[in-house]
Amino acid sequence: MTVDIRSSQFWIDQWHNHIQGDTAAMSKGYSTPEFWDGRAEEYYQGHEEEGRIEAEETTDRIERYGYLSNGAEVLDIGCGTGTLAFALARRGAKVTALDFSSGMLKRLIDDMPQELKNNITVLQSGWDEIDLEKRGWENTFDLVVSNMSPAIHDPATLQKMVSASSKACYLKAWVTRKRHSAVQEDIWKLLAGKPLEDRHAPFPYMLNLVMAMGYFPDVLYKKIEFTTNMTLDKALTEHIHYFSTVFGDTSHDLEGKIIAYLKQAAQDGMIDETITGRTGSLLWPVG
Image (cartoon, rainbow, N blue to C red; front, side, top):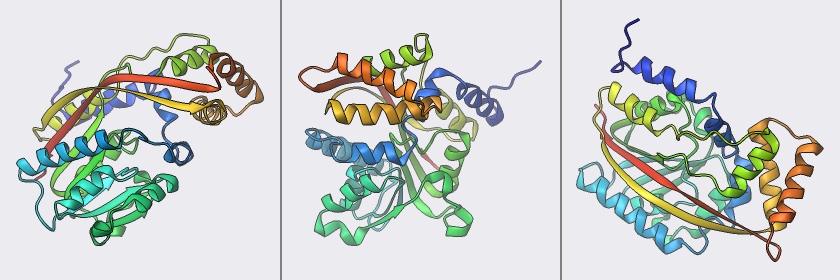
């Protein structure tokens, strides 16, 4: 059988095959608004300046390629607490900040500088639920961005992203497999009865699908490492919800195993988790 790796359908099929594996199963835990509502209060606390600098660097890159100008219409898919949206708005862009988490959007609204309020429109919705035709968003935005968002999780959501743009897209996501903390991997093994077979994130499919669609993105890779610190009670709530989503299981047995593990793992009532890996970002013109 002849296989055409240059075709969009080949990479769509490969991505769908990937969705059946452990890596994609772990990603499901990040796919609910409830998870991010729980993370919103402490999200990036202590790393605000680091996040601001990275957002400015990203905006510089987009601007250098000529994809950002004063008054440009920008859609930020999965905007989170708004760090990138703020950087874009400071350059004069009119940003539609979209996220499914009310908690993250509350942080964005609370943290929004007064001078940017006229440049940012906040909209709560999941990207899957957005109907481009009904909203009049087909080929509408000068720039569409998705910065480490679970919103772009399959071929259809990536293709929709491209369809919303008239000029350019920016997509940043995990590249490597080592994105989970030791705590997450231990709990996976405890619940699944086997080690996590975590091969890689879906970035290779994203990159190759974009190229198969006829675009030639600029690619940038970056190593990343960060540590989260949370109380045992907060960790219990988060991990029970996370793994209930991963396994589609809300039983007391699952809760009991997670509670027992985290109580043993806690140090002075706190759970520290370090996540390491590499991100990749794609920037490409549309049309």
